[in-house]
Length: 441
Image (cartoon, rainbow, N blue to C red; front, side, top):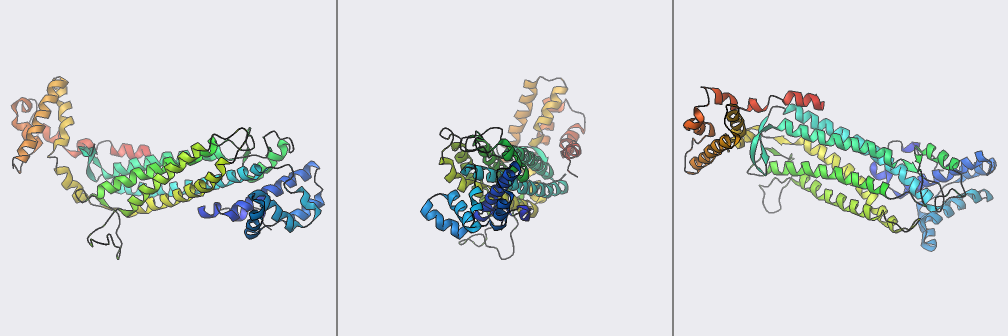
């Protein structure tokens, strides 16, 4: 007999969305509803005792029956009734409609899936936090539009990732509250045949709340929110997979996916070490977004119910939940194994010839009394000249040196003042406070 869900207290994601698991929850709903009817005085206790002891199903028999019946819920109840093999089976599915089973089971499955995803995100953030702490002061150039901007650290980059997945964790925890609903309110949601007390009893036993109001189905904006949240977390995964892929480009090579002994990168070019995990995650995020669109299409149903959503949900729910679970694990592995090249970060910072100090010098000149327009003109003029010097073959081209060679700039600075301003320390003075605020220890 399959009755209680407790044996699945910690299921794997793939188990939650199996046909076996779904039918087990259906059977539990059926038996809980009948138990509540016993307490109400509608069903004789002896009949329920027989039902409870004999209720079972097999997927094979349900599929066999469905070939003729062309209705999955009726195939299920028919198989269970066959196994009860007694007049007591007349109380099976009493007052219920198909979606009372389907949507309430969906509530259980969504809650259990979210619980796994929350654990995945928590584990991922621990990996990110360790990486951030280790490289808290590993200098690297920050980029805007792909162009050198100002110095940052690899630790700060990882701290940003840590914070982003903190939002993912909070979204999942809030989502759990939004989807933890069931319904046993009948064919159009009027509770005509089962009282709200029956609905409340069953939902409470399943760890759900009764939907405040429903038609035959729980409204599909709830389910669209579930799949959309999954897609949004997938977008965050893609954001960081793309970041790491960029950092692995040959011309950059500041970070690289771990490449195992014996691994091959290309069937044609033996030298290749490709960012295949990041690329895989990028591709799978597209699947999640596509599923979110399908979930939104499911919101508009005819009147009190049609089944245009049903076929879609049989695909997008198992796929989205299983994919995100997999993606979070793979991103955790990718992040944990990421190879960092501080020497390349230092090399790349030097490519912009110290011009990442331009805003610092701009603001210093403003403080010394120049208008913003005049200060900007002076700094930009010397930055452009530094580039010209470099392209003209000056191997010692340097922004700070160029600034000091310009009398209109140099007259505003005391000896050593520019040296102090034009340093990475100037940019890193708030890092410890930022890490403390984020709770990265």
